[in-house]
Image 1 (cartoon, rainbow, N blue to C red):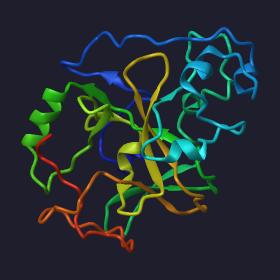
Image 2 (image 1 turned 180 degrees about the vertical axis):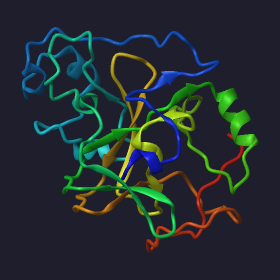
Image 3 (image 1 turned 120 degrees about the vertical axis):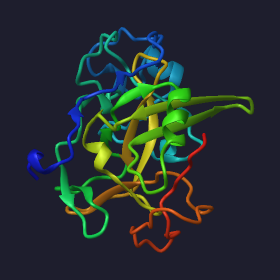
Image 4 (image 1 turned 90 degrees about the vertical axis):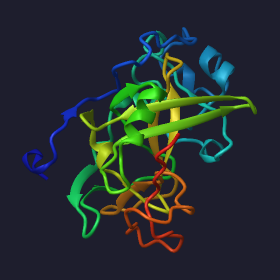
Amino acid sequence: MSSDTLPHYQEIPSCVTGLGAPLSLGAIRSCSCDPGQCSSSASTCDCLNHHGPSYDRDGLLMPSRLLSEAPPIYECNSSCACGASCANKSTQKGVHQCLEIFHTERKGYGVRTTKDLRKGEFVCEYTGELVPLCGARKKLSALTSDDQCYLVVYREHFGSEKTLCTCVDATLKGNIARFINHSCSPNLVMFPVRCGSIVPRLCLFTVEPVTMGTELCFSYGDSTAVQSGKPCYCHSERCTGRLPFEPSI
């Protein structure tokens, strides 16, 4: 699809710091491995030993990591000596080249794959402006259920008391992920991935094999309690009939 026909936004390959977001992103450990060492089954990689492996030799997310209660994903980073080809850098190789924007029948724009995808394959990062929780709350409070919303608020729960929220607003800046629609039975799942920073990247992976030409979707949230607002046209057996809408966070 020609970019001339798409809604205007600035294309960015990774998240940028928005107004009010913290400037210090912190840092996490790195390794001194030789190229290829991080993928070894008997690895001495500091990153893998400390955080545990997330990917197999083909760069696919391990089945245990696709579970909702799986631990956070940590990748080797730019401070590591292992190089760009490291198997523990699956999400750092850019957006999957098989993605295509198209017009859906009733949902506006959508994204589909132009090749078969394997289960656990990285598809793309949801990029945009990193905004503080207070800014996300202000924006959501001003929206109605009929407004377009490109704001993702991802919550991580650490124990029973601590919750970390990562807020990414793709309204003005983002990538192809902003066109991915919701489904009540999604073939993608969003996970936080840390690559040298305590602030995660929100990455989308396949939860099942996906055939060429299939629309890619992820869940925007729980819509079981939504009584009004935009209808959901995912047509899955588990469709609730409404898109998720949570004006207060």
